[in-house]
Length: 306
Image (cartoon, rainbow, N blue to C red):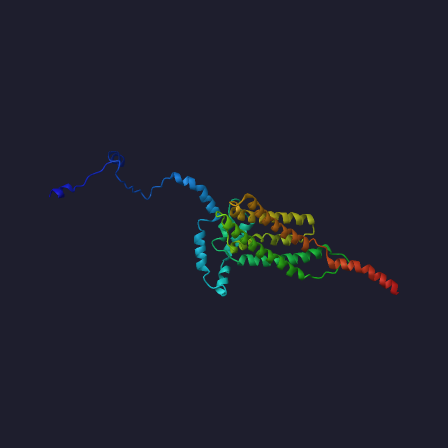
């Protein structure tokens, strides 16, 4: 019975008083779920790294890859495998187009718009629309420039469609492929580099080309100064999207390599825009030149025969 009498409830006072009386005691703190937890000192040290992870997309990369693997589990030779690349709604496409037209400094385009569901629907139709916009606008531009000249005979140049398609689709696929291979190679050299997937890079390049669709339509204006102003505006917008997207992926690399990578990306983009403007809009009309040069020869030959 003495043992039973020893089992009595005791009231404990403040935790601080108990710890003062017995420093070796183990205490358990039960917090109120409605109370806001206090910040720990270690959270400040990791805030900078968390911002980098948020910008680069490190925190959800494993989950994204897992979901992507579950989503694209069909064999690559089946129709279902490629159907997943076009599984995107109109709202997502418009949102990504808006993001490519209004780049936000400090925000990653892949992180905000692409990583949750990369697609090929938007890039494919943007490239197709750009091809016809350049080809049709180039024909109309030459027609308006030579309108009213007696020696000019308008002939539609359908070859411009195939040339524009070759240039646009080769740029939209080969350049992302080369950049993806380069990032994978540098990722094996520098462990801190975050590499995008090939599909994500294709999405970035595809949506960055949307600005050139209205630009190509406005290139019909037969004023070289206006055309070059338009190309500089389009280049600054689309180039900034590419630079702000790929700079976080290479900034942890060697400084010279990182800068050379971004400069190469922007220069290739500039070469595409300037090349399209120079070839499809500012190039001299060969049929018109051949007609004007052949007319004097025909006149001389007619005079000799008479």
